[in-house]
Amino acid sequence: MEVFTVDNHIWAIDHELLGIPGVGVTYVVRGEEIALVETGTALTVPQTLAGLDALDIPREAVRHILCTHIHMDHCGGSGHLAAALPNATVYIHSSVAEHLVNPTKLMASVRRAVGEEAWPLHGELLPIPAERIRPAEHLHLDLGRDVVLEAIATPGHSPDHLSYRDLKSGGLFIGDAAGLIMERWGLVFPVTPVPTYNLEAHLQTITMLRTLNLPRIYVTHYGPHDDVDRQLSYAAERIAELADLVRRALTDGDPDVEVLAARWLPYPDNGPAGVVARSWSRMSVAGMIRYELKRRQSSPS
Ligand SMILES: [Zn+2]
Image 1: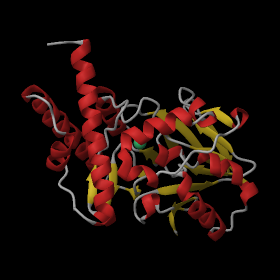
Image 2 (image 1 turned 120 degrees about the horizontal axis):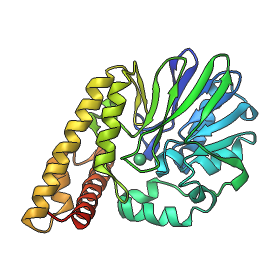
Image 3 (image 1 turned 90 degrees about the vertical axis):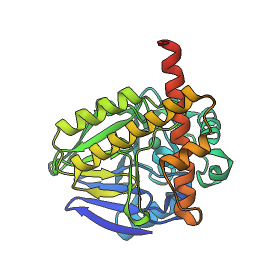
């Protein structure tokens, strides 16, 4: 576990997602009240709690837990965190809130999406009582001391995906909308996962984000980045490449996920970065294939 300062009122706790540093963070935002943005998985919660201890933040002081979307590495730890942080309310898009109350269906879907190799790294969701969950899509959260977080819809990576603008710094907690930027591992690529990826919505989201002239993005995987426009345009480029690769493979016949993943994202064979890259690039290829097949079904041309 490592804690680093992001801004005067923002810290990041590296909670060692998938058991490795440099992959996932939970952000801590401090006004009068404390909010966490992103929860990691159930398995990263002990590191997040240790990070709060290192920052001298008592468990009772955390009032809000914000999730950008329903994927395990963003909200999977929410139940365990809610149990450990007795005064915290959990915020997520209302369309998926039921999965945090009753996570059985979600866990089965994640297991299919990430595959058996990566599944044990994701941990199990703990149900959250419905009264501790609030809809996040219109969130305007005043934490005091001029610290305000505001939700912006950023669908595409998943339909429920929200980002949270920190009005004080102008920076955006962007979740997965700009993809992964994991410099420590030399991995920078967008994730377009099964089962609900939407290419059109994602590209519209990226275009919209570029018009905001954001000074900074706070990426979940991983850390703050100031070269916002460059990162967003790179993500759009890599998405277009993948879409093109998938369309051609579908036209040629039955696409092989493994082969396409290795072609789109040549990854290291061994070591922790290899596991992340393999799992997330396969998931992205599968997500793009599924999107394209759905698109062809609804408008055959
Ligand atoms: Zn995600």
